[in-house]
Amino acid sequence: MRAANSEPPQRSASRARRALRWMGARLTAFMRQVPPERDGAARVRQRHIYILPTGTGLLFAGVLFITLLGSLNYQNNLGLLFTFLLASVALVSMHLAWFNLLGLEIRTAPGAGVFAGDDAHFTLTLREPGRRPRSDLRIGGAKGRSRPASLAHGAQDSMTLTQATTRRGHVRLGAVPIETRHPLALFRAWCTVASPARVWVYPRPAPSAPPPPLLAAAGAARAAQGERGEGANDYVGPRGYRPGDSPRRLDWKALARERGLVVKQFGGDQAEEIWLDWAQLPASDTETRLSQLCRQVLDAAAARSRFGLRLPGRIIPLDSGAPHRQRCLEALASFEQDPL
Image (tube, rainbow, N blue to C red; front, top):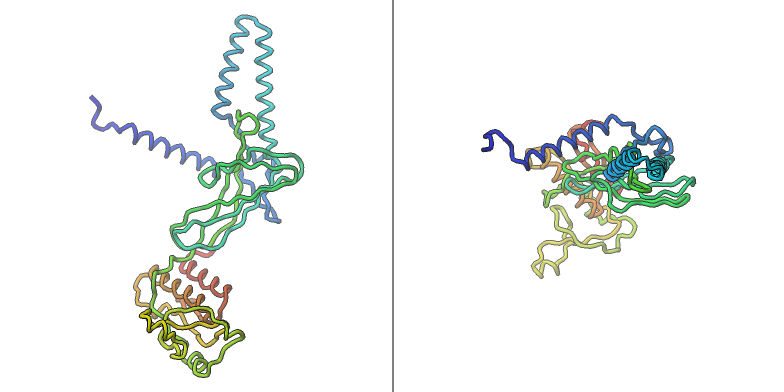
């Protein structure tokens, strides 16, 4: 009869796997990592490479031990010759696995910013500096891919690594293990590359947000005078009506088709100037306000409006364009975050 306090086998196995993963993570933290140099490339040196036998290698060693005992017991010189020949092959395989990583150049680059909950993308490039061809290069861990990379003389291969995001701020690629089992899979040689690459994680935009007010003085005057920039006659597309829009911009045909109030947008239009203000949002908690501000930033940028952003302790002045949109999204992502 099983004791009352004994654990099910599945739970015990799960705890054992978690303990092994924890020990592996701690071991990796104490290992020497390949640091990036001034040109941004990380180069694998002698003291960065670690080697351990694989399961196949341990089985191979067991077979060699049995053949050695048998050859010694029966005084079989041919068996001893065969045993030592296989042992020398294994030693050469270990050195080839070590040389397969030595001198390898690795570069990491961040991808574009993403919204919280989306996967962040990083680009990792492996380059052979022209010394020898390399085979069976893999990215270890959950970040890696199953297809190994092979590099000819002076060639390079790029791959995309993904990392899940759960909250705004930024996500780092961190340590990237690169391993090889070339040529006979008897030994696993690996090194860990320290990557400073990081991707901005913006707040998740709200499905909808209160319409921001137009800049009363300059915006109303320009709207009344019809001041526009270069290319104002180019039709861009429709958008939803906002309080303060000129009636001359309304799409009356869309209203007649019961599509609601829709405003026509024209390229180069500088009539709208908008302030996106933290204090004017009805939400009470921080993350909801940031989500609504993110939605307002995206809508204002899509409408090609000049807009500014007011946050507690920070003001981003009126501007437009993709760089300004990026500055506003980064300000929302880093709000009340520790400085990098």
